[in-house]
Amino acid sequence: RSSDVDLGDVEVLVLDEADRMLSMGFIPDVRTIIRHTPRKGDRQTLLYSATFTDDVMNLARQWTIDAKVIEIAPEQKSTDSVEQLVYLVSRKDKYKLLRNFMQLNQLERVIVFGNRRDETRRLAERLQKDGLKASLMSGEITQQKRVKTLEDFRSGKINILVATDVAGRGIHVDGVSHVINYALPEDADDYVHRIGRTGRAGSTGTSISFATEDDSFLLPEIEEVAGVKMKCVYPDPNLLEPV
Image (cartoon, rainbow, N blue to C red; front, side, top):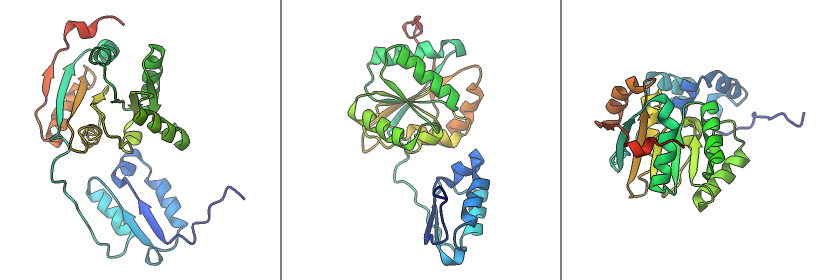
């Protein structure tokens, strides 16, 4: 059929974000795809991962033969160029805090992270309804739409990108002044990836995290992984004015 893809002649197989595929449960689907490519001795296989856990290394051994392992440590932690602040806020006040913070600071290029597609979609729609130039970047957005959205973000046509972690890892845009963690990530490694979207190319950036009664228990592990003790404050009253 015209929709079929013949993988029998694949010469180079590239597996990116291996740790993320594991945590998201995609490995069974990946196995199915790999089974339709030539045997591992008849292809070159490259596997990339931000973290090399035992599970990731087991996958590497299954899909390669006598693979060379290359580990690259950054000269500077991605967190070193990012100021990190945590707002202690109730669940019901989160949106007011987000909206007021962005408007009072007149932010021009900011990425707001949520944990789930439905959460980010509702948040993007609410921001748009309130007249802010926001757009959604999540796994439910087509590749063509993602490219257009990133172009609009770079050009300033939109200045708020609401993203999930899956979509956020592919965002490489200079000039992002703030990353806002609307919801703390359940995986502490994702926090480091998120804040790495700002403070790029020698510039500095700011990470703002909202910690509520639902997720503040995640902070100690995030601090440990990020290697920093974050400043926790309560929002000023003007940041909680009704919107």
